[in-house]
Length: 605
Image 1 (cartoon, rainbow, N blue to C red):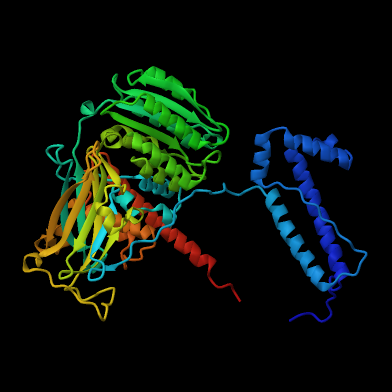
Image 2 (cartoon, one colour):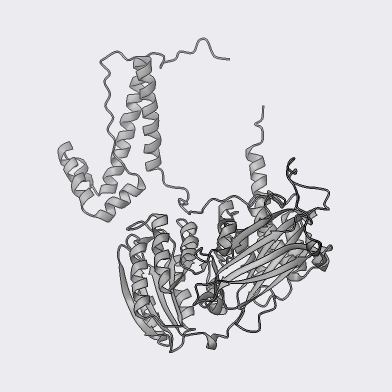
């Protein structure tokens, strides 16, 4: 209850305005002091006349373009506040003045306050999970394959830093395809990959099944790889000045350099505010020369990525090897801020240059300002692949252990299309591949771009399907729809799997068709393969990180149990590391939930 004897000294407009004026004066003094410090004024300069101080500020602000940009980026601004107290003040004017001062005070304090933690400017494209489809209404699903793995190593970095990843950083298919699966490889390159299917129980739902599709690329031993023409395109802008960026980048590229042969060629292009060539077409076995060029790199300046891309393509074209591997390897944090910075314009630039037969691989580095969206899309546009390098072990995996699949393309524009049988399957949803979805008519259109498969690559896709015989459906049938009864010869088919691909030097696609039969269904999860169960565990984990919209009561503990049972052969320890990450995510989720409960608990009364 309010005290009736309390005197409100700010009850009159004049007194309130005096208080506001005093607040503004103190704020202006603090802001001016901060500005003097930022522009380099000494204590002697600070005592100069106002006109002299303005001149000194002007001289300081023009002394360096970079300093002015930094000052602007940090938000140091100088505002003047003028108050007129001689005239009567209306209440409306007073409220407006209070609002302006409040806003000014907030911005001033923000400018003076030292940040408690680095600003996170990481960029991830938003997307929604694939929804459930009724087969009677939408029987066909079409998408491009994806061999990128950047999402997995990026969320590993986040988890190891003690934070759960943002949902948009989690692309389910990239987590699944981070791991190799023991699929039977094709025996010759005439058909560059083999296709397997398996159907089993869904770990998170007793009413549905998982349709597992696996593709295994034809492998080549490292000595059998064609001659390579590689251009390292290295970001040396100021944002790369840290051990987990330029320092790690140098070490990673040195690992790749040690794998090259005398018939391979390597060039190095750098870019910051401008671009330049630091090594031009050296032989792959000139290791000392390559390492010396890498060691000389240092970071500084802005980031004109587009200029570097143009220079790299020009250099790659000059050293082009017919029937060889011609590829640019872009290593950056993706924080382009000079020149062509528009996302679509950069994609258009890459798409135009890929017609020359030169592919683009992107390697992401760093934290805080990392542009995952740009890195993933540039690799897609450049007929390449995308990896995020969070430590030297990841560089070893991508650039040494999997060098054949990283560098050598065995099939391009690979598309998958599934036509489900409405007499057997009632509903389905594709797990992941949201930004790889294609229209039905795109499947037969050879001008529509799709993903590439490297030598020895394995690609996995999962559908969750609900059979007609299931007692639980997610979508009610349409009242007026007519369901076509399939021919008797098709009644035992669940679906027809179609794949289209092109040989690397061809513009005409080839078609593979495989019917999938009801007899392939394995009702017991324990009887399915390690490949099936481990990929399902990874898919479940990724969906939980994205909110678990379709996973019912499935938990991280369930993921752990399933992954441990299906670990199988793990020569490099990647599956064991996955189990550790799931355990860590479980702990972080528990801690986050506990803190949230404490923060939202009711106050004591």
